[in-house]
Length: 298
Image (cartoon, rainbow, N blue to C red; front, side):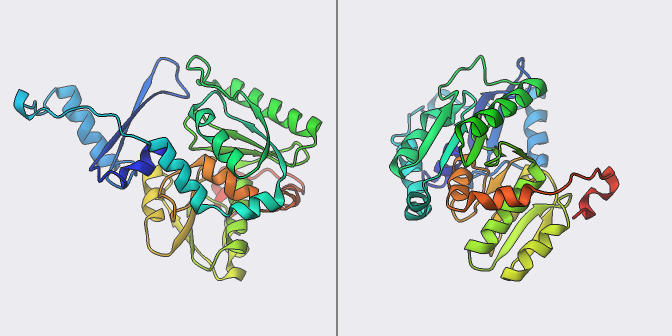
C-alpha cells in the first residue's frame, strides 16, 4: 500500500514492487503499477512478459541511463496521510481491545506507529519481519487463523485481525473468536460504509452475494458489479461516486484514500465501528450452497 500511495505523490509514470510469493516459496512476484498505483492491465502484463522472454526490449545508451535514488519520508508520508484520512476521535472513543497478527510482514514496521498515535490497545502477534516465514501453505494459513481465534477468545478481545504479508488483504475474527468468512466480511464492511458515509456507489465482484443490494439500498447506495480481477476492482474504485470496493478474498478499497487494497486502512475503518455488528451478522445457521447458485445466495 505504501508504494501505491506514493505513486501520485512523486509524479511517477509507473511503479514496480518485488516480493517473495506469499503462496509459492520458490517464486518471486514482480508487480507492475500504473501512474495511479493500480495494477497494470492483463494486456500490458502479457506485453511485458512477451518482451522479457523474447529479450526484445530497448536497451538505453550509457548517457541515457537514469539514476537510482532513495525517496525520502515515504513511510512517514503514508502514516501522515492515513492519520489525516481516518476519524481518530471515533477510534479513541471506542478504544476496543483487539488482536492483530502481522504475519511477519511489512506492516509490522509501519502500522504499530499509526496505532499508537490513535491510542489503540493492541495485542500484537508475529510483529516483526521474517522473510523465511512470510510464505504460508494453505494448512499453515488455517493454523494461523485458528491461533488468532483462540487468542481473541482467551483474552476477551473485541476483534481479531490478520494482515497478509503485503498488508493488502485482511482476515477477521469476531468477539466470540469465530472466523468471519470473506463473503460475510465483505457484506459487513459494505454495510458499515453504508451506515457511516453519504450515499454513493459500492463496487463488488460479480460473484458476490446478491444480498449486498438489499443491505445498502436503504442508505441510498447503489452496487456496481465488476469482473473479479484485481485490476477491474481498482478501475471501479477510480470511478466517480464510488466510495468503497471489496472483493471476496479479504481485499478492501477506500477510493478517497487510494484506489488499491489496503489492509491497514481497512483495519482502522472497521475499528471505528461497533464490533457487535460483526458478531450479530455472523450469527445464524450455515447452509451449503452449490457453486452455480452462490451469486444469488442471500
